[in-house]
Length: 457
Image (cartoon, rainbow, N blue to C red; front, top):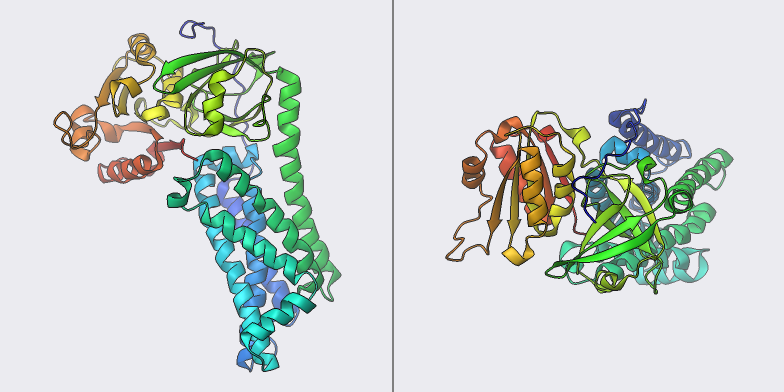
């Protein structure tokens, strides 16, 4: 099965949305102001003469803003193609990470401020007041469990913790974010200050929850099912690429009508064994050709190890395509592609899809050893077809063969002197991407010319 000479499919024209990123950010900010405004209208700033009232007010505000931020967080998890095309999945993932920590601190602040405020007002100890709240106030125990789940999700999202978790474990724990929001809903609705005597505020918040739930149902459940029924995706073949890396070929119906571009990824579910409920993000490693999709997987956990044994004919459900790591983001005639390890998968697809132009495309491929450098024959063949230049940067740093990092500023300037005049596409480990962003900006590459895709979860 070869893809170098496969016919090109009809690619869907990207939809031009009437709304711009700044407009959506303004809407989110305006809703936050509206929430604070409703709290003020309900008397939030009245009777703040005592310390107890001030601390309690802080607890109310952190609860409202923390809940609103949690709903935004869930919206970012909805995989809406609208948000994906508007902002790009890499930016959304970064926002999702930092917003998650903001949610956690706001809800912890609510718990601390409310408990301390009530204890000051009642003249009791903090411990005694906490016990009273847990045992007598409606849904406080449920909300406490919700906070514990948020803490668990946040703790496992820290990079040091993620490195010690398999993707399967991390994915399962991350699903608790949905349960955490659900558990906090009744607590907010029953004893929330903004809902006690204002049916409009009550309907407003219920509306927010309904919109978020609808997004999850449509894009995380409905869209994948519709795509599965339309294209009937199945595993056609599994090919070893060496060093614990495999390529999975997927076939189906009317793949030429699937609006996917080189550089994008899907969330894949293989309906075999007990891993069917876990979705794994993998980029396509060959440009769309209307005949098959190819994804390339490195053994990094329980499910990826078992994928080697997938049988032809296994049904596949895919969510997507996602990502803005495509040629549509290109602003310059020349392109620099930088791949680290298995991050070469979407880079290889981009190399195949970019228009041929001698001297316009350069690829820097960083790998720890030649055994880890996959697609060498394909890359070399594509380079000849596209008039591209490839530099294989192979070896372990600080060894005799490779005493310096080949992707330091001096190394990049030597290999690509005109780097500031190119669009730069980077795919690799998170640390590599962050480091290269800083180096490229130092070298004078504008931020809008730097495009990155993270393959680490």
